[in-house]
Length: 96
View (spheres, rainbow, N blue to C red):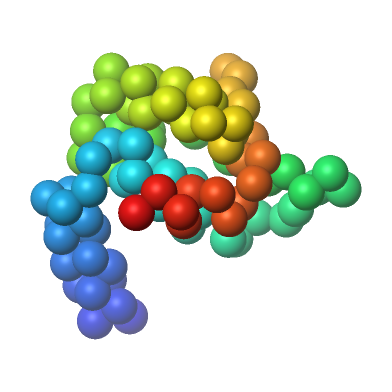
């Protein structure tokens, strides 16, 4: 278990330096939805605040707000109070 955590930590640290906030937020959402159940419409909701997402991706809340806006503009997700609904779970993978 410890080796797995170290690998994940190293992967995230490398990601912080090589990707912008939009891509890091998108990758986080893909990770989180992989453990969620898909609704009948194919949408997957994640319940996190902007502050929580910022802490997980190593960015400011303002950067996360801009990243969410960019992903909304691309019709990848919709947002509500502490809720992000991923409309197409495969779309964030194409942002690399």
